[in-house]
Length: 178
Image 1 (spheres, rainbow, N blue to C red):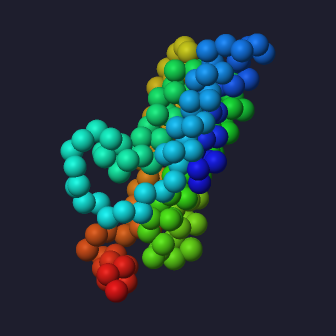
Image 2: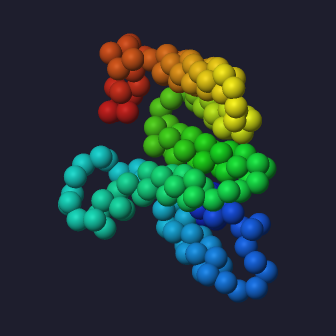
């Protein structure tokens, strides 16, 4: 998991565009690897507030910070399409593995279904982001289809998960308590 976090942050900095001589990008790349190794481990603690200090909050929410920082770094770069696809795959894989480690009570078929929905939604968003919609009325149609498709996949994931009062959700909650 730590290596996946380091690769996620490093890939967000667009390493193929770096010069071949030592430059500030190499320093930021090393800092990203160190940050990814620190924040990559999943947080398995109970969600209780121990302190409001920034370092305690960063330690508690390091998985969320890692994903958010990777997304922000990738948004500031203009990487090639193949690196965008790799970064989306790394981010999704990291988030799904962290989620699977934090809640191992779910069945494998449910986790596989949620992963399939998440990868499909991300592929749809990536393809719509790369679509050439610079002119005419086609841009709005493509954007509407992408939004509706992503919303449908999100609702499918939530339906697969089940509502909070559903018997499956109550059974998994009781199984975690015992």
